[in-house]
Length: 150
Image 1 (cartoon, rainbow, N blue to C red):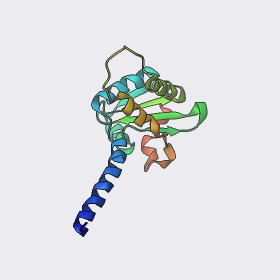
Image 2: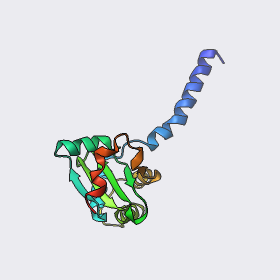
Image 3: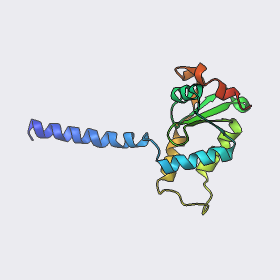
Image 4: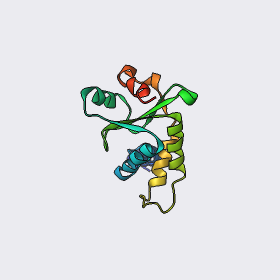
């Protein structure tokens, strides 16, 4: 085998190895995100739309489609930024987070039609633990979303 052919084989193997990793953290589909917003509100989260500069700044400071938690136990507050579908920030309690997680892991059969990749995307969303509030680059920007709905 020539050096050039060997190089192509190595590159191909590297691409095949990294493809599943890239797919695992791809952005969720729009139908999944639309349903997620409905479920978040059903679970007890409150949405605040980014219709002023402070909320838009907070929306940019939060990681999209990831939960961020502040506090622990029953006092924990969770926020979830959705910049693409509703352009809003969801805020809720630990109870709301657990209710939402239960809705994703145990979808009600026959309620509505979901995309074939719904379970895959739900699993990807639940695979990562919520980020800690303290790890954000600018936690003061989003501080109000953890205290506003108590």
